[in-house]
Length: 344
Image (cartoon, rainbow, N blue to C red; front, top):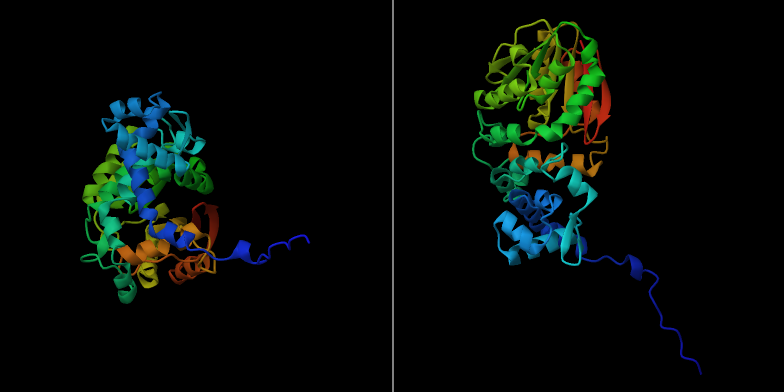
C-alpha cells in the first residue's frame, strides 16, 4: 500500500515566531555597526576603490579581522554588496553614506546616536512610570543644552529637502521685501534657504547663543550673512518685535505639551503682520496615532528625552493654532513630516 501523505497543519506558515522580538531587542547592534562604518568612513573608501579587506584596513587604519567582520555584517544588513573578496556600495549607500555625495546624511549619526540620547532610553520603563524623561533637569529642553550644537552640525543635510519645500510652498521667491522670524533656528538652514530664494528677505534667528554661532557660519557660507540677524535666548522669554511676514517653527513643538505650544503660538500671532503666516514643520501622525510607524514611534523619543513632549495629529495642531487666534491652517505632506501653514 502506498504510504499516506504526512499531515501538515494548515496554519504552520503563519505560526508566530520570536524572530521579530529578538531582532528588536538586538537592534542596537545594527545601529552600532552602521555608526562604526560611518566613523571609519568605510562607505567613502569603498566608493573610491578601496574595496577589499586589506585595502579598507589600510585606509581606515583598522585591523583586517575587524574590517572583514564589520563589512560582512553590513552586507548581511544590505548596506553593502559582496562579490568574491570585494565589497561594493548599494544604491542607498552610494547616495546617502558616501561622503562625496551631495545627498550625504551620515553626519546625522552625530546627533541621533549621541550617547546622551541613547542614555535616555536606558531607563524607558521609568519614563513610562513618570510620564516623562528620566534624564537630569529637563532633559533635552534644559537651557543651553550642548546637544543642540551637535544637532546644528549634524542635521543640515537631512533638513535641506523640507527647507526647499517650505520655500516653494510659501512662494518665498515672490514675496519681495519681507521679514522672517526663525524660531529655534538651530543650523539655520530654513531661514537661510528662504533668504537664498529671496534676495530681499531679512531673517531673524532665535536660539541659544552657542547654537546661533553655527547658524551664523552657515549663513556666511550661503552668502546671506548680511541679511541674517541673531536673536539669542529662549523663544518663550525674549521679545521678537513685530511686523513679520513669516514665522518659522521647525521641529520645535514636539518638545512641549499643548498648553505650552499654544502659549508660544499666541506670541507668534502677535508678532505677525496682518495676513502673515506661521509655518510649522513637524512629525504629524495619522489620527489613529499609530501610523505611519516612523512618525508614531517618534513619540517615544519625546517620552525618553523631554518632560512633556509628544507628537500631535493635524487636528490637534489645527485646534491649538485656532485657540491661539489663527484663522485657518493647511497641511502639506513632507515625509516623514508635515508642513502646516497657518494664516493670521
